[in-house]
Image (cartoon, rainbow, N blue to C red):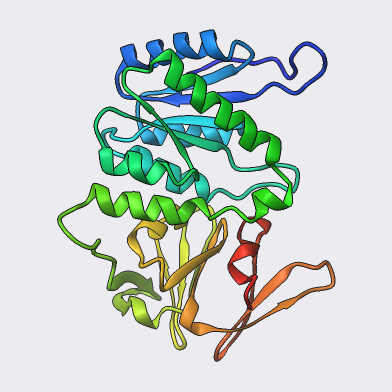
Length: 280
């Protein structure tokens, strides 16, 4: 994993656009970097990753405005990496990066990209096509914070679709049971009985109507193992069972607070996930 310092601003005082490149083939990374230097010389490449996990770590570290992800990488695919990036908690003055997928052959994915939620670059990166991608990215960055950008379809919808297409053998198999520590014993807890999951640095608390248990599995892993229609991530450290939500309110600071059926605990919704409750 390569990182390098980048200037904080371009000539003229405009904030530099920073990018991370992730591809398991070194020659492809070098070729894309060279092409980008031709069509977007002001772009600052702040890091290069050879797999999806490194890409997620670099995005966490640098908070770039743009990330290029090879769609098929060992361990963590580009789509899986993009899903983790899309779930990152962000500060009030930050935005999640724009995503451009790098692909050699996934025609079904190319068709999905044409929806305009994400963009793509075909291998090898040709100058003319990359110039079109750069123009689209610049336009999307310029629209950030506008009503037009707020009305755009959530990137997670596209990523779920792509993830399903990358696994054509059938629907994903989600966790049905959680093996957790309850006191001094190990118990098998049905996932459907869980009200919510809350993580700290070492453990994740599993809360049911009658049991509080602990597991050594972080939220970012649970997100990919649980049915997204049943469990919503509402905070960097919190997943909640949608069927167990009693209501949504706001506290004195304007933050959304989730009430849970039959349980006194209130769960805070971070800014990154307030869109989940716009219709409520």
